[in-house]
Image 1: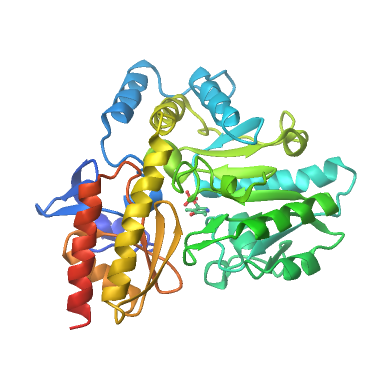
Image 2: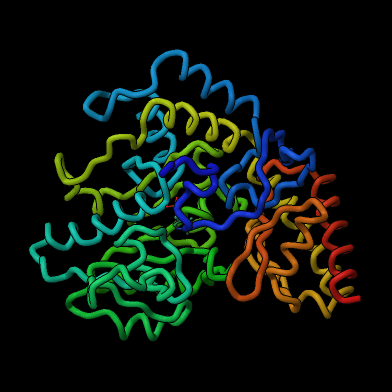
Amino acid sequence: MSNVLPGREAMMTTYNPPNIAFEKGEGTWLFAEDGKKYLDFYSGIAVCAFGHAHPHLVKALKDQADKFWHCSNMFRITQTETLAQRLTENSFATSVFFSNSGAESNECGLKILRKYQESKGRPERKRIIGMSNAFHGRTMGTIGAAGNPAHTAGFLMDDEGYDQVPFGDLAALEAAITDKTAGIIFEPIQGEGGIRPAPAEYVQGIRALCDKHDILMMVDEVQCGMGRTGKLFAYEWSGVEPDVMSLAKGMGGGFPVGACLANDKAAEAMIFGTHGSTFGGNPLAGAVGNAVMDLMMEDGFLASVTEKANKVRAQLEELIAKHPKALVSVHGIGLMIGLKCVVPNGDMLLELRDQGLLCAKSGDNQIRFLPPLNVSNEELDKAIEVLDRVCSKLTA
Ligand SMILES: *Cc1c(COP(=O)(O)O)cnc(C)c1O
């Protein structure tokens, strides 16, 4: 018997993509093999922060590819050291651990929360509190922290040491903290479970609880970090700083780069030998990560994200007023935009895709607009035009 299958059938069935494959990307546009072109407001789930094939990023990757690709963290990787320095200079953190994905960045952070307590002579403090509707990735630890039954079913033992509280409920959080709690993990703006920003007073309240109980505060900025909200990091909107932060998605603009950042207090126990990664922060990742930072830190760039966000939000509010049978409300900060629908969000996404606009699904019957951060005003107008048309069609 032959085991030669069409490529698609050789894929494990964890994904279910439509029959669309791309052959080229250019800025905000993706070109499919069948000749159709799409305006990409999906950005590979907030990954392609500067769209497709940005010349500065392509050059950084190619230049490094010509030199050497990999040597492991058993040697110094200067490209990545530079990136660590730039990330710490521009954040609360004093040190960085590099990984290849969001889940791995979170794994590092979850380990830090526990290690901190052990190093303080409190090894019984292992429990980590997460939030309802959270998403932290698909590893054993991160599905435990998020506690979404759709993701944990069949994978975890009864109690892996994670507790969940309703997102946004400070009293419930306070009540959940015990003498077994190591730390708290949450997304400053929830992404997968419906776009939900954590109010500043809530984040300030979490900070105060963490200080009071000497537990660590970890923010998962895998989706909302790296300029997405118009600030380099979303925690900056709250006026307080976390102890630990995970990053990934936008960090490499499409090249797999992740990082876990920490302050001195949190990182102190992560001594030689406590954690590691073969590929994390390899020279290719370092080179591209620096190129992303070059663009992100250009004068006025983050302000331009906010300007575009304000413009498109005003346009979306107009569409909501015009199409009350299709749209309910707009959510989020900056270019992390959730649009709550009346019609099923899946129908909306399909119709938008047919009309050449790619968006992402989210919980709470929302669709997500996650355009590249350097999207043009014309492209935003174009997307609004398509959405307007689709709303008319779906409610005709
Ligand atoms: C996507 C995402 C992750 C997981 O990232 P992977 O790279 O898929 O492991 C974790 N947290 C948040 C908030 C995310 O949006």
